[in-house]
Image (cartoon, rainbow, N blue to C red; front, side):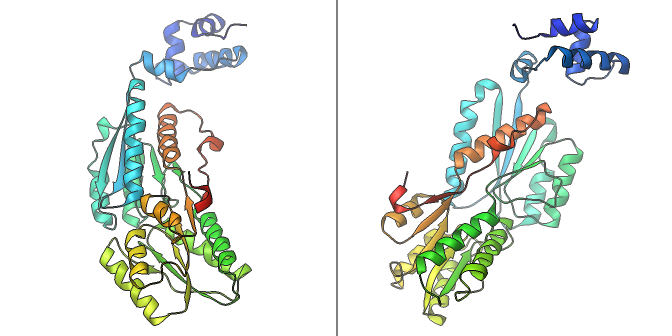
Length: 342
């Protein structure tokens, strides 16, 4: 049996094709009684709208902005490359994505960027920034203007954002805790936790999940207070070296975010690169090499290509008023070891 078309809907409802088009696209100018008649015809016929064809016919162009932290970061370099590749692949579908770089730890600069976006030339925004009151307010203003907003990697749950694309960081932290505890194989050990910033929700949630597993399953192990590099390689080197000088019996390091390059360089310099259990996040050239060299024991990874494609799909769905398929957009937590390197 052939799929029903808009012509079938028009005949079934006793209206013109123009009226059907206005109802399907939620445009004004149609009486409520007529709208109900068209919708009932759609339901009776089992009509499923081909959004792609409809947008193509209307010459719809999706224009998205990705607001990403600036600065040297191998994970972000990979993300930017994946975004450019995905946007080029979907150019024929009339989709474009621009990257807006902002200082990672300057909420006022982030807000200035969000408030300065050319909303009349944008259909959606994806944001990868720490959650602050200023950022929440800026997201609220975007939503008030009818702009869909997606949070990337680090969630903004207290803002009116439409969707979060990224792994469950609490579960990722628990996963890191299980790996650390089982790899160390000691009832009593000290563990150092390092990250870029504890303002980022992903770092906060990873630390919470990690601590929960330590308390539940490895109560004899002590996790030291988190140390932060704030995007400063020299600071990372200094505070890691100070931590090992003051606590020489550290047996494991949990790297919760960026900063693996200066972290590993410091561990090598002080002669601790091979006698620790190290669990890190994100498979990058640095963590890949460290896995091969047995300087990192496990990497908890999220597929960057999936992140990018999911963000683009969610933004398109929000523009079209279409359903989001949660199972398709759920980002998997991958555990990468030296033995299963892709």
